[in-house]
Image (cartoon, helix red, strand yellow):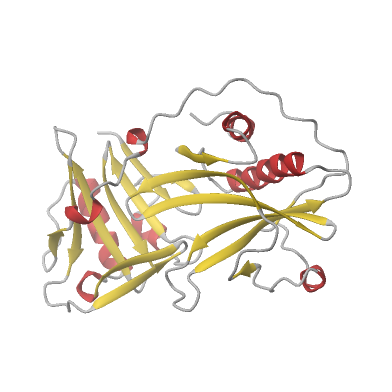
Length: 299
C-alpha cells in the first residue's frame, strides 16, 4: 500500500504515528484549510468543510478503470439540502451528510488501520454525480512545449503578491478598488493571459484564468472565480498581484506577475498545475516555461 496524507494549507502531511488525525483535523477550517485527503494508491478518503460541518467521501477504483464514489451519512438525518462551505466555494449535499470533525477523525482512522467503519453511519453511492470527472493522469494530453526564452525582467518591475503583501488601503482607494480586493464585475480593459487547472479530487478542483489589467500607474493581475456562498454575486474577480507599468510592456508584465504569484503560492505548498486549459496573451510555451522556473523540483 502507498499511503499519502495531505491538506489544503501545507500540502503533504506526515502520517500516523508521527502526526495523528486528531492533531490534523483540529486545524480544519473552511477559509484557510478546508480539506484533507488520505490516499491509498488511486483510492482515497476525503473530508471537506469545517469542524462543525464537514462531508467525508470515499472513492474506490475498480480493475477496469472505473470508480465508485460514496458519501458517509447519518441514517437518522434529514434529506433537506445543505451547503458545506470550503475555501473555493463548497459542496451541496444533504443535512444527513453533514458530519463533525470527530466523526471524520474516526473514519480516517478506520480507513488507515483497515478497520470496520463506525457503527451508526452508512454509505450512499453518489457515483453518478461524478460522471466526466477526470483524474489528473486522465486529463487531455498536453503537447510537449518548445524551449523558449523569457524576456529579461526590467530592474524596476517589483511585483507585490496580494496574498503576501496586500495592497494598502490608500492605494485601493486611489485605484477605486474595494477593500476586499474582490470585484463583482470584470475590471475594465482586461486582457486574457492564460488558464491552468488543478484536479486534486472531484470536489476540490481549481481552475484559474488570469487577466492583465492596466490601472493608472500599475499592472494588475486578476483571477475570476465562482463563489457558491454568495447568492447575490457568485462571479468574483480576485486581485492576485500588481506591479508598476512605467517602462514595462504588457507581455513582460504578464510573465513576471504570474511567475511571482505562482512562486508565492509554491512556497505555501501549491504544486505544479495538472494541465493547461487555454493560452492567451502568453503562449503555451511561455506559460510552461514560467511553471518550469517556479516548480523546478516538482515531479
